Amino acid sequence: MITTEIGKARTLVLANQKGGVGKTTTAINLGTALAAIGEQVLIIDLDPQGNASTGLGVGQKDRSRSSYDVLAGEVTMREAARETAVPRLHIVPATMDLSGFELEFSQHKDRAFRLRNAIAALNEGAEAASSYTYILIDCPPSLNLVTVNAMAAADSVLVPLQCEFFALEGLSQLLKTVEQVRVSLNPKLTIHGIVLTMYDARNRLSGQVVADVRGFMGDKVYQTIIPRNVRVSEAPSYGKPVLLYDLKCVGSQAYLRLASEIIQREKALRAA
Ligand code: ADP
Ligand code: MG
Image (tube, rainbow, N blue to C red):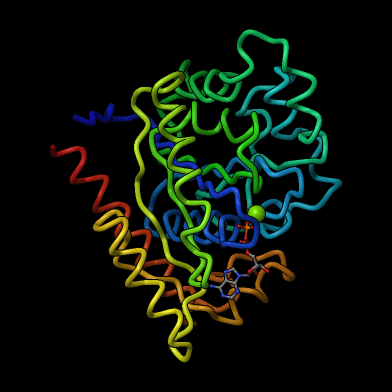
């Protein structure tokens, strides 16, 4: 049985070792949607490319305290967290330094737990009362030590899958990694859900992929499907989540629905 501690942030990791499936877009826009409905949200950017940071308007010069510095133990998570243009949404930005993490820390005993320890410290001390209710971790397109840190720190994994022919390819490897992390590092880790992204109603293949993924993963697949929407892809170049760029577009509306669906699942878990 899954138990959740009241008052502690729910930590969800966006993971898929494939690139370009919508991890970062979902981190930014789900984070914004959760904040819009009143949650206190922290996004931790763990991809050395730093796309979540850029997409939330945090430029290179504003990354003097980064997620790498947190993993390295040089600053606390709270010191590295920055405000964004979205009320109640903070981000710990990423820099290229992260790409050296695996090699640099391979000999450290706590190498898989550095993120978990940094997040645990957020829930301690006098500031804990004003703490985050959701932490979203954006992962690199790889099952490396950085991603393992994210899974070791998380309550649950949220998997974005692009509605394309090879959608399911790689999913079993990902599920196997989640299982290994659960067995060896983090017994409470669950799969929160699968979010289908970039759905194109004009393309029959998209519909087929939805049916296949639902057939394979059942009700782990969220009801909400994120449509392919040009407003979603334009927004990052303005350093804005799509909800700030064009609240009425179908992409924004889908991310708002996904946020309420996630909150509903969380309520069900808490009641269980
Ligand atoms: P990942 O983080 O998994 O590598 P991204 O979130 O960066 O994937 O998405 C890959 C590309 O697809 C980006 O250019 C992004 O703007 C675009 N994209 C993501 N979701 C959508 C969507 N719903 N509609 C249109 N373009 C999208
Ligand atoms: Mg990304």
